[in-house]
Length: 401
Image (cartoon, rainbow, N blue to C red):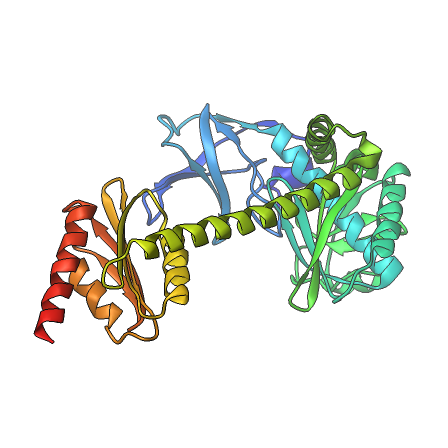
């Protein structure tokens, strides 16, 4: 482990090293292997570090076949000299805070509720743990959060120690270790003992705070979302800005925000219901006007920029009013034609066949059944020309009978 400088000093941000090799991986990406490194590779739920090597940006760090590969934006020009590595400290310390916070929170869940952590993910904005329980109450969350923040406030030391498998029995581990040699313990005295290969701060106080944001059921577990350290302030800033904007928009103080928002939602639902009713009334009036001017119980009309859904509603109203009527609607929508054809129950024409014949003229697609069909295609003719084609076809069918 002597080549992994992040285990010797997690606060190390600059170092010099020698390049052992520089190669491309099978996908053509350049990487270098150093004789030692302070860059942490992805592992144990913790993302990799970022930074630069000789001012060339690192895009990934992986441990593969026992070597730590630093993937770069491009190859180094000179590998036969001491090279300089510089970590993105803000990212590293954030990961240290989140990872230590996860240890504290998981230990608090287990100590108070005996809920074991079975999953962990450190994301760019939030952290999640999966708990081995199917239920979690708000009161339980509050108790756990209080204990976790108390441990942080006490500023307990966070210690690390390398042990053998035989030495593990001397520690009350939160979970069984996966590795059998080179076992690294991360310990918060009298609170949490856990095998872990990640980076952590020197004391719990550096985690600053833990805030649980939400939780949800994930199969047979509960997934808890939380943040630690600087992310708590980031979340607070975001939510505070949103809250201040809402107080202005709703013209209500913070304490009445929920009531004001609920009232606005109910008003919106009532207006939407009223609007739907009025639209239905307008469609009914329109349908009756079209029926009044129909010839031979054929209602055909060209519309501008009407949705196919609106045409469907209008057609259904018409055939409900008069079951001996056939409907053929065309809407000219920019460079497309939308078609709806329908018949009342007293008629026998196959509307799907009528539609298919019309769609052939405009390279269109559609679907439906023998009584109601709809579709659309390219505007290779005007809506009026399409109506005329339909009427000619119906005339031929009528004369043929």
